[in-house]
Length: 221
Image 1 (cartoon, one colour):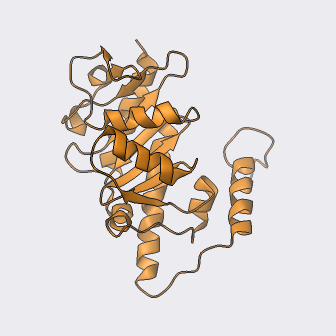
Image 2 (cartoon, one colour; image 1 turned 180 degrees about the vertical axis):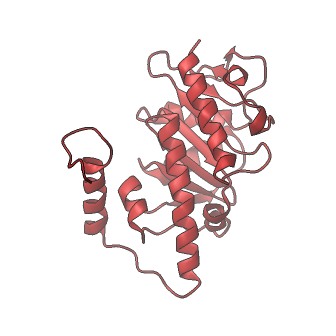
């Protein structure tokens, strides 16, 4: 069942420790199959090095285990809450990556001072209110703070990114951590200047039109 999605979700979970976004077994990636509505997510408490497509857990939108021998991630309820409220989201990634989470520790947003964030997100990375750990409060905090965006910091917790797929959500988490690190280092030397909204909008539109291999593009670019 959902073999391709299980392979994708497993692969993207492996990207988290590979890119320094998690330690131990903390953090998780999930993906939703748009046809069945079923969600694939990593099992709870299993080290990333032990994950295989066969260890992935398939659940329905109510959290019932449809396939899998292990208990799903403790954050499954949060993922499901977001999926229920965001039809445009079919992938989620949660990390405690150090630089981005340092902003969450202060209850601060990551300002859009770098073009990589504007290209991918088209805005800053907001930070939510403090949320009591658990499905409803954390999920609601993510939905409220995101305002339709694809990345949120949850105060005193960590990073939640969303995407059209598990792969896109994980990619956003990686770029977000890089931007958080660079922004943090810049802020050590003084205030940083956020890009004006019209430039943020221009960068976002330009990236959407030109990045990747689809469409007519200059092969030398």
